[in-house]
Structure formats: structure tokens, C-alpha cells
Amino acid sequence: MAKTSSGLDTPLRDRLERLAAFEPQGSPVISLYLNLTPDQHGRDHHEAFCRKAFAERLNTFKERSPERASFERDVERINTYLANELNRSANGLAIFASAGAHDFFDAVQLDVPVADHWLFIGAVPHVYPLARLVDQYPRYATVMLDTAHAQIFVFGLGTVEKRAEVNGVKTRRSAMGGWSQARYQRRADNFHLHHVKEVVDTLDRIVRHDNIQHIIVSGDDVAIPLLKEALPAHLTDKLVDVVKLDRRAVEHEIAQASLEALRQKDAETDQERVQQAIDAWRAGGLAVAGPEATLQALQMGQVEELLITATPQELKSVQKLPQDAAPPLVAADTSAPGGADTTKLRLSGELAARAEKTGARIRIIENADLLRDCGGVAALLRFRI
Image (cartoon, rainbow, N blue to C red; front, side, top):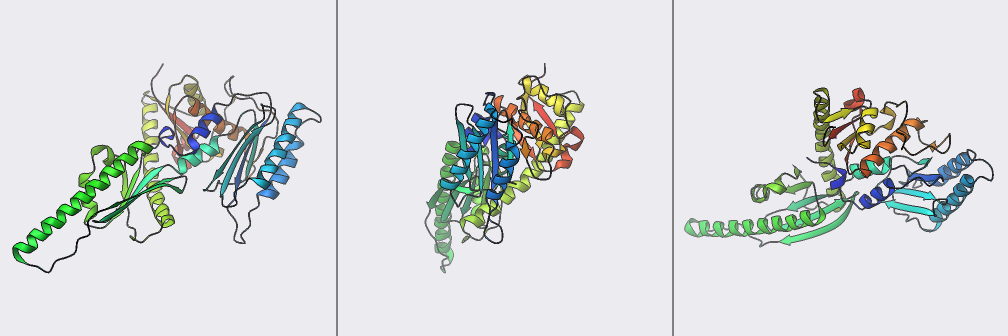
């Protein structure tokens, strides 16, 4: 199952590309990630986090410096946005701001939660958490069907982006016998086949138009075999799984079950891709392993697919980032959970941004053990130099 950032055309795709292309302007850039999911008492705690984190970071700037002035204006604008423009139904939020860089400001409200509250300050937007969200919540299609009715949902970032219905001819069991029964059954079978063909044609149009990479199917024991037989090869290649769902299931139940199936398959594919990269690297083929080698390959535009751990703290530190890496602007540049190592967080952002800039696919590996012997990162290459 292909899983590539370039193929996951969620609403975040253009945002991620633009943010990765941001060039340092000499002013601090705020990257603020907020988990807005309410706790068991119906409250979220982003306001307290922002007050504390902003106050801590402010003290890292010199008094009356241009960097401090830019940061203060950003904080004011962010607080205004949170007070007046935040949709209370949002579960996650990412804000990128740099007043000193021509009043740069970009806010992304999300239906899905981010992992934690996180404030990161650097020379460029910190895009790794955004790349992980794109990877965790890809765009995919789910087909719910029986022999007379079908619904096709396109999910992206945990919500329904599009839905379509295909209605066939309802047939009933007949009590007739002999030739009449056989004739009636052939007629019903023809209706079923025609219906399934319409479903496949509709699905094909949606897949092509929306660049869908993954398909999940649920249906009855009669319709599923007919669908599988009718699917052309290019759709069969995108079929991830057939799941059991009640035909009366509501959208959030369909989304939850289909996303779980997608992630189970994704875990299998992660292992296959990592093993493929390791085997190729050891054989001197089209792969590299480790942060230094991967950064060098990204610099040369060699990387076809970046494989990076979902836990940046698992990344092996590098002695020195490339000369053209975005420079750090302040000594204490993050308010991240668990006392995170800021150099490793910066490295994760550098790897993700370089992959985006060079058109490399990004695969986030959720099982940290798979890449541990590679320092948390490896890459499959387009070519060798």
C-alpha cells in the first residue's frame, strides 16, 4: 500500500509545502501547536499553556531588540486570533507567525487533535508535527454497499470531505419455482451486476478526481465478491481491506473503523518499507540510513522517500547541521512536553522541510523500534551519485 505525502491531497498539503518553502528572514518564527480536545470536564487548557509559554520565551530575547519586538507583536496577534477567530468545534490548531517577516501569519484549524500543546521558535516554521498529521490522517475512500444501494465517503483529516450515493433496483426473494424461479434469479443477478458496475464507475471517477490512494470496503456477502470482481486493476491496487460494519452505521463509526483498518495495514507497510531500506543500504543500493547520510542525500535531491520516526527524541543527534540549515535564533526555543531535546526537535523539522522542498515522500514510522538501529531515520533514493 503506497503511503506518500505527495499523494495525500488533504487540505494541509498546500499549507505544508508553502511552510516548508519559507526562507529565513532574520526574525523569529513562532510555530504553535494546540490540542483543543476538551478534558473529562469539558475544558481545554490551551490558554494557560500559552500564557506560561509566551512569558518564558519572551525572556530569551534581549530588551528592545527587533527580535523581541517581532515576538511581542506575534503574541498579541495570536491572542487576538484565539479570542475572536477560533472555532470552538476545532480539536487542533497550528499557528505560524513572524511579524518581522512582512507580518507572516498562517493559522490552520483542525478537526483532529494534535498530540500536545507545543510552542517552537526558530528561523523557519517547524513543520514536522504538521507532516505527521498529514501522515496520520490521509485522504481515503470508504465504500458501504449492498446489492441495491451504496454510499461512497471521502475522508480527509478525520472528517467527511465528500459523499456520493448509488441506488440500484431492489429485488425480493421469490417463492416461485422451476423455470420462473431461475428466470427471476437471473434477472435479479443482472440488476445486482449493473448496480455494482455503477458503483465501480462512480468510485473510479472519485478516485481519479481526488487522487485517492486508499480504499476501504464494507458490504454484504453477495455484494463484496461482485465488487471485487468488477474492480479494475488500478483500483484493486488501492484496496486496503474489507471491514465488517453494520449497514446502519453512522459517519463517525464508519470513519473510526475504516481509519483503524488503514492504520493496521499501514503498520505492516511501515515494517516492509523500513526493511527494504535497510536491506538496500547494507547492500550498497538505493538507500541511506542515519541522520547525517539522510541529510546529505536530501541536500543532493536524491531522496525518493524519507522514513522518519514518529518520536523525534529517538533521532540520533548530529554533530553539525548542513551549512544551509535554518539557524537557531534563541537558546531556549521550545516549550514541548517531557523536556524534549531541542536539537533533536530541530533536526526532525529540518529533515521534514528538506523532504518537502525536494518533492520527497514522507513516511512517519510509528513503531520507534523499526528505525532505532538507524538513528531514527533512513531514506530510499531515486539515484546514486
